[in-house]
Length: 132
Image 1: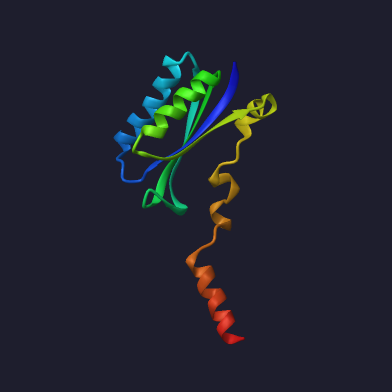
Image 2: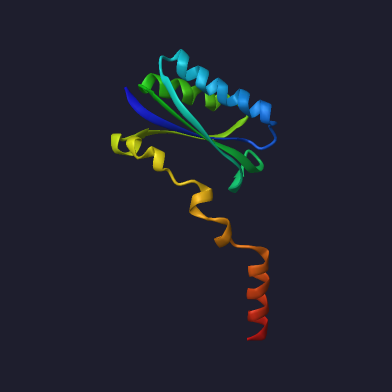
């Protein structure tokens, strides 16, 4: 059995309960295909770099699981026909990444609030450019 991670972008038009149902469907598929669900990490609503299915926002989820290629194929097939799934990707993790998986960088740790770019910063920069 190998360790996998499935990255899924769901439609931003779904409610919280509908999103939970979609994630639980994926977890159910993992169980039916004799895989083991390790955890789910929601990354929330984010702007897309380019439109997917005419949508500019999506809700990101990362689902970790253990299984074989049949489980991966079952997830792939079910997400491919799911209209609420904008994009998905199954990633096979190597053993070193799985043990270091708890150290995964999140958006909050990568960009603390005190360092985050604000609208005031852009106004200050535009004023400096105007003075030059």
